Amino acid sequence: MSKDFFDKPFNEDTVIKLEMYGDYIRKWAPVFLANQKPFVHVINIFDFFSGVGRDSKGTEGSPLLAINILMEYAEYLSKKELSINLYLNDYNKSYCERLKQNIDELKFDKENINILISNKDFKDAYRELRPKMKNAANLIFLDQFGVKFVNKEFFQELITIPFTDTLFFVSSATYKRFSKDENISEIIGIDPKVVAKTPASHIHKLVTDVYDSFIADDVSYGIAPFSIKKGANIYGLIFGSGHPLGMEKFLEVCWAKDNDTGEANFDIEGDALKKSAPSLFEEFNPPTKIELFQSELEEKILTKEVTSDFEIYFFMINKGFLGQHVRPVIQKLKTEEKIHIVYPSFKCSTVLNKKRKPQKISIL
Image 1 (cartoon, rainbow, N blue to C red):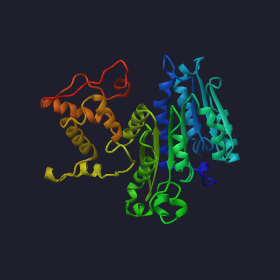
Image 2: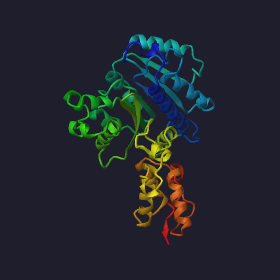
Image 3: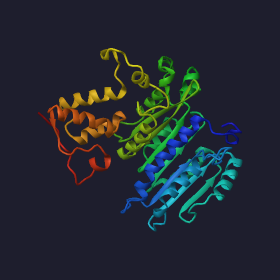
Image 4: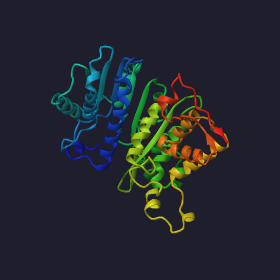
């Protein structure tokens, strides 16, 4: 990271990254804080590349953002059965000193939010804090500068940690720019030939696919990307969770940022252009990402490949969509009297409720 990074205003892509991190904390924290019968009693946020906490204009960086968002749930922080911990690390000693000062100036519940700041190399910090993740709900934020820290070995270690969601930044354009450099491509074993054939706009999706290939078939774990464009370069976030609720909540964050594809801060598939400048002849208008998904879902329902709202839910999440994209399909098929289904749900909290049976689809 450049030495003056925090001595100037954050640029647009950094702001987007921070907004999405903050938006996810808002969805993640109350799952554990507001639960009347907590199933975990330790709640941890790990920020291994924390920086100083704000930019030159006072815009909050990830550490202060996390603290202030936790304070939005102040009524739950004093629960005796909960321990709430924020672990902050940066290898730069002066950053840690400035971060401590910025936190000291902050007004928050210092009795109930435990903050530990460490000044270590990432690998040493992770090794030291790894035991803290046991029997806890964890959110790990890895805002690395570049690509080198989240390699295959480390990623496969991350996905083994129960009750743990991970959000990490990848400078995906690096794989495109240095595709012939073995030191770069070998970090995740990305194929330089495939990189060369991949459009720059889709490089982050390719990198995400490589990480996805590291997940064994018998491991229940999902990942989702969000591409961020800065000038001609594409960077991005990759989110991972072992629970569909985590995936659902991150997808909500993504679709709030991009209501065309839910995966970028730019027109990655050209869907915005398709809508703003359609052909005079409807048959020549290429389908959007949402339309393609809805068409595929309709076919799977009518051919009985998916037979209940439970199966639709997992098909939907694995494809990177939400209930708002499924409901029009269900309504259309019911209106056309092609199916019958009673009170379907496409929310994790309902679909995975042990007291509820999946709602079956009848083909008429």
